[in-house]
Image 1 (cartoon, rainbow, N blue to C red):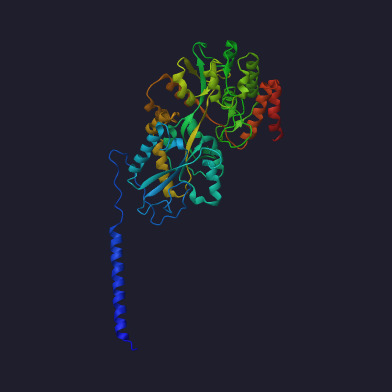
Image 2: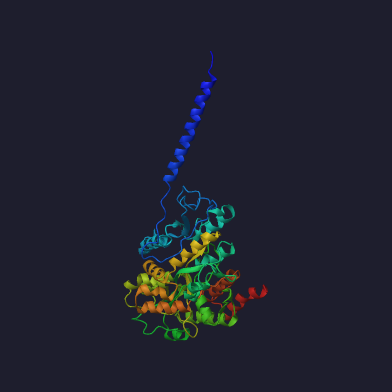
Length: 466
C-alpha cells in the first residue's frame, strides 16, 4: 500500500491549528468568568482601611473543624479568611442572646473591611483534651500551619500559652488608648515579660449576697463580721479550676482577696504572690476565730466554687455568702430580698479577684496580624463589648462598657468593684505558693492547728528553697 506523506502533513497541520484556536478560546472564557470586585464599605459602617493581600500568599494547612476545600487562608478573589478559635458561648452559635449579637458583629466587621476579610469562627471546647489551649500546644510543634489567627482563652490559661510562645505581642498592633480605656486588671492580665500578649474581653468577680431580712447592714471588715456573729459562707475547698487541668492544690480567689486586704503583696510587674508572715497570720486567725464563733460554717471546706455557696444561701441556710457576679445576675430575680456588698476584709472591704476570657493573636504573618488586631479592636468597642457582655451574662472590661446596660444600683456597684479588682496572681512559683497556702488553710479549719503554727509550716519550704 502506498502512502501520501504530503497529505498526512497537511492533516496534522490543520489539527495543530485547531488545538491552538481551542486553547485561546478557553483562556478568553476563563477571564470573562472572574469573580466580581468586592463591594465598597457598607453604608454607615466605620471607615476602616481594607487590607491588601500579598500577591503570593504562603499556603496554610486546613485547620481542624474549618470548612474544607480551600488549601490556603485566602480565597481565589484575594479575600483573607481570618480563623478565630473560640468557645461556643463566645460565637454566633451561642444559645443565649449573645449568639445572634455576635453574628451581627462579625457580619458588620466584614463589611467595614470592604469585602476583603471573612471571619471563620472555629468552635473548640473550653478546657481539657481537644480544648483551646490543648489544641494550640499540640499543634504548635507538629502542624503550626493549623494554628488560628485569633484565639479566645480563659485568663487562667494565658500564662501557659505565653510560656509556650503561642501569643504574639500586641503593643504595636493596638492603640495605647484602647488599653488605657480598660479596667486595670483587664490590661494587666495579658502582660507577660513586659509585653502585652492578650487583652481581656469579658469578666467576672466575687462579692457578697446577703438577706436583707436578717442582715440590716452587711459588715465590711472582719471585726464587724465576728461581732455581729453573721454566718458568712465562702468556698474554702480546693477550687480545682477546669482551666488548670491538673490535680495540684490551689487556693480560692476569696483567700487571695483576703490576703491582699490584710497587707499581702501581689507584685505589680509580674503578678507574683509574695508570702509574708503577718498578712497570712491575720487571715488564718480570722478563719480560726470565725470557725469557733460559728461565723464560718463547717461546710466551707466542702465548697469548691462560689456557685456552691450561692446554692446554700438560696436554700436559706446562711445569711451571707460569697457569690459570683454572673450567678447573682442570673438569679437575683428569684431572690428579691437579697442585697449585695463587697467582700469583707481585714480593716476594709477586700479587693475582688477578676476572672474571665481574653483575646489574643497567634498568627506570625504581619498582614494577618494587622487584620486580627482590627478584629479585636472591633469586638472591644465599648458599645459592642458592653452590649455583648450584658446579653451573655458577663461583665464589661471597661467603664464605658456599662453604657448599653442603663442605670441600676447593682451596675454602679459592679463598676466600683471592677475598678478596684486585681488580676489573679501568676508566675512560675505560684503553684508551689498556692499549695502551701492550701495546706495551711486545711490545717487550721480541719485539723485545728493554731494559726501561728500553720504560718510557720507554710513559710518553711519557701525559706529552705532560698
